[in-house]
Length: 369
Image 1 (cartoon, rainbow, N blue to C red):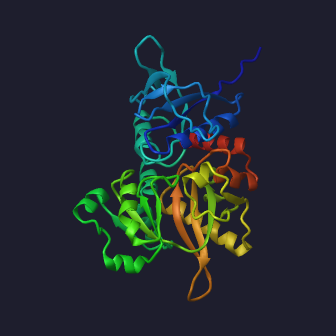
Image 2 (cartoon, rainbow, N blue to C red):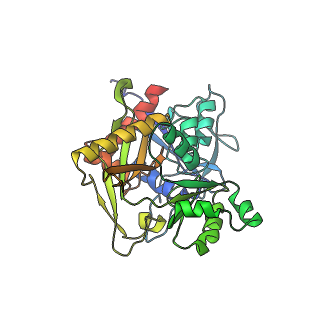
Image 3 (cartoon, rainbow, N blue to C red):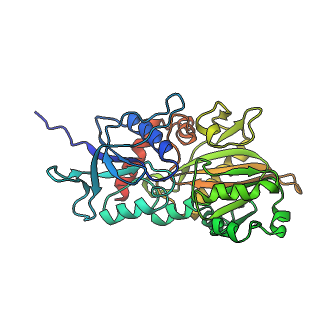
């Protein structure tokens, strides 16, 4: 009788200490459901909101009747820091090491998508899916994303950074100068610099509401970015690492269209309300599609991303020339993988089905080592 080849053991890590804990859980549930059980031995690893790592049973990772999932318990484990260990050690003694071949950190936001977990995995000698420490940290921080993309000649919207925003408001409630306000105009979007899923973001149409918006953002991150509104269509594009060391590959773009009465694409519009329509692929001209794909590839390379990324744009019109104006809004190094998330949907429209997409990410991480 011929022995069956050993399945690759993949630790899918989700939850975490960020405000995007629940969305990470939903993404992980979708990823694990798509993994071929004949090829992969999946080890679900949840991180509770207070940072404990636990072996999870993989169930209950969906939004049901508006209720968001959460990691609450399980067998406590710790990642072995010794690169010769390569696994998870149950705490409390008596249980053997859970050996792992590769880690898929389906973590969104702080303490997961920002280079912290990536550094931990580097020290542990474990291959993992996604960008490394620097690219994860730079892409998570909106200020430095903008700086690096600007240096690469990729257009950014006008913005101002408020450091220690909560303290700035305490010292001076008018933390944004009049010159800044005149330059940015209204409306502006006030955002935590290091967060996602539109958590902590406020659209400000009256300067009287500005201080409250800064306080909301500063409750998520001490550094706050104030962005001028960029008129245009909201378009996204997926990027995957090229095969055999080739150039990064790009998906067909998609467009997010807000329904009547929806002001902007906030958290509820993204995950809870029937507030948007999606065009996958987007209804763009061939020239527009090519431009979105090319700038997505350039952004991925400028930030030194690996594995995957989703690049978000505003596609508008230059008021002077009348030509298309393409402005990068954000780069996500671990985009959402929920059933409605744009990244897997864009790749499905491009001929890469969800299970194939996950397989490509895992095998790519193993190939990088």
